[in-house]
Figure (cartoon, one colour):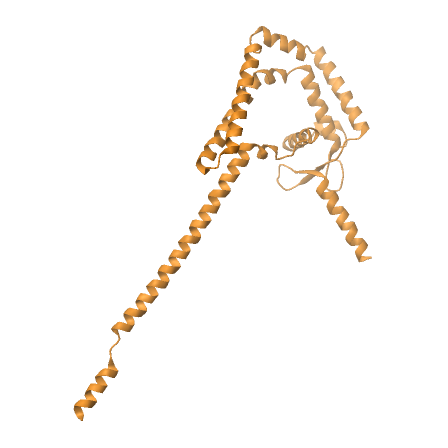
Length: 261
């Protein structure tokens, strides 16, 4: 019986490890993401179509229309694509250079350069991605993501956080709603919650920090060893000095005895 209970506990622990989880904005509450059902997916697709139609009726541009507008204004085009490829090539080159670097100081500098290059590429792509985020397709896709989020986020007891999509839309804690949406988006894209910490520059900076910590600890150990040796030498010197300054009473007594004889 005890062995059976142990097996059940082991199975529950494995299940707990396999489940995708994240911590709420209060940094205490833990939530889980479960796989969507076929009904959840159908509901999400319906929500997409509904939102797309409503946006279209409201006069919001489609992605095709937005692309034409950006092309006419010269915001995107051959020059935009050329610069995007250049920035991507620069980023890739710096990442390769970072991976080959062993010197601590140079590695830190190159990690910063990689982060700057990645930010430049991101900002350049925002010339396109920013406007495209306000199209019918993107608005509808955001609505679909929110619908899925309302369906597949549960608490530790497997109870859904929101009974339906309307409850999610009424969530008072916007921080929780946004955190859950972000985590579900990463889950659907197959990315880990800490994917930003796994970039080459982030890993390099952690490596640099660890090496600095190791060197600092080694310096402290050496300083303690030197101090211990100095204290030992000082005690030895004090002992020798005390022994040297001690009166030779025995010699005096012997001399006095010979005089009396």
